[in-house]
Length: 318
Image 1 (cartoon, rainbow, N blue to C red):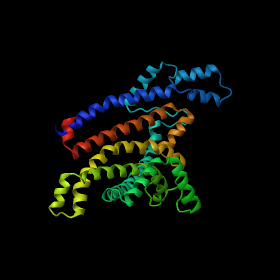
Image 2: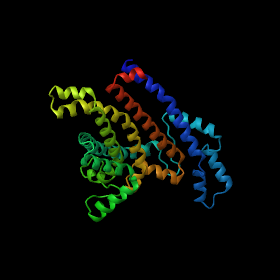
Image 3: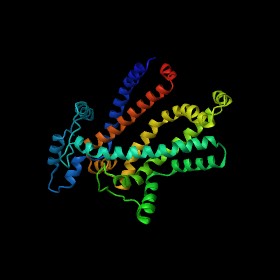
Image 4: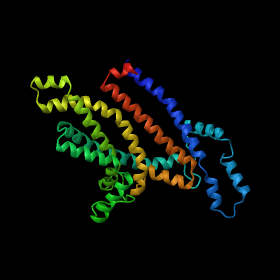
């Protein structure tokens, strides 16, 4: 199967998944008790039950849930994400204002993960079952086991409060400035640690399996330097497994950004999601949740495409 046809089939297969994500997201959010009208009435002692009913009609919340979903889906497909009732600006504007902060944090987390995982995984595989391998496995297991919020709080306590090396809480500088790097380090390490640990374990296992295969023995028998065998042959084939799980790890970074942004006071989409929950802003909550779902689906799609590029046999198996 050609790569173009493979990509087209994967894109078409993603459409029902996205539809399912939108249905589940909408249903779960609307099944939770309370809404923006309840909050507005609670904050206004003079509001009567008739006022609440009128406001609910104005916002379309009196309609059956399936009808609300169709209205919302139609608006979404036409690029209208709705309004933020308690603040005035539209949902799209608020999300676009916060999105660069989340992207910067996610990219920093990924760069940190790759910088640790690739050399760590290679070292562990080359020194399999030796002391260095045991240390790397312990470090990887620790990185996977430690909760994001606890790691973030410990980094703040040690490196920001005790040593005063890094600033934290609500960056006071431009995202493109050099100073921003110092604000990114602690939350970036927090969000990238679990991904780094997972990648290191997967790369170590994959490389250890590849090093036992006949083509590696043949390459060594030809007199190729060990460094060439490892970096050019073993690592390249091992990256197929890494690319497969990269999408799932990306999903973890995106979902983990909610906790990390709250802990560090980072003004991204994760912090905005918590604000939306507290304010019962359904449109904002739906938009951010759906955005995360769509991002994860696209990340999986890209991982499949990369997988097909690295191993053309996958195209025929799909």
